[in-house]
Image (cartoon, rainbow, N blue to C red; front, side):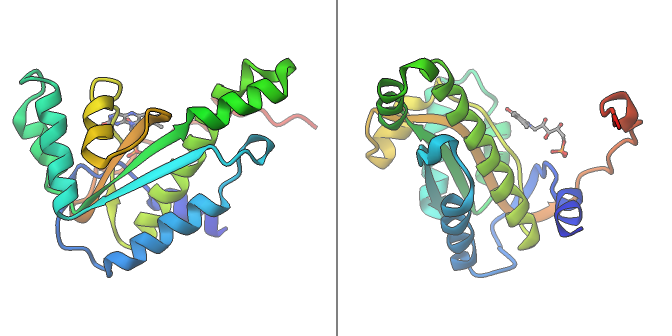
Length: 190
Ligand SMILES: Cc1cc2nc3c(=O)[nH]c(=O)nc-3n(C[C@H](O)[C@H](O)[C@H](O)COP(=O)(O)O)c2cc1C
């Protein structure tokens, strides 16, 4: 199964560099197509993505470092800045609010569904990047960095930041995963 092969390859790659094995336009295409194709509750299209490349990526990680006022180690931030780009994942609070008003019975579910759809999009792009030979990891410096990110890229208040995915060439691959007895987590009933 292609999906399993792809999932096997996707890992958290922390040692990333600036020389991509493919043209940056391949990443642009991946992000555009994954965002168009990944499902969302009620087909509400709540997902928003900002793809920060090159110099914008460097500026982003400097802004993230500054937002923490020295509370996060510079070396840690520089490890992410060492990549070529960052995928920033958001959902649009206005879209969620409109659906909550329209379907009051499900009002409490819409923010959860928006987060779930965001996770689906993250996995699709993470796996797609690896298929392009690109390593990535996922970070959660939100909500501390929310204002700094909005201001850096001129984003509206209704963009709710969910995750940051720095990516780049694979400088060092991660250690192999430990084996697992999957029957502890999956039950087949028939
Ligand atoms: C919802 C979610 C949140 C995560 N948050 C972080 C994070 O903030 N920082 C980080 O370094 N890794 C984060 N990770 C990565 C996990 O730690 C990692 O996927 C897990 O240890 C399995 O390793 P693998 O990605 O190499 O398969 C997150 C993963 C998921 C799915």
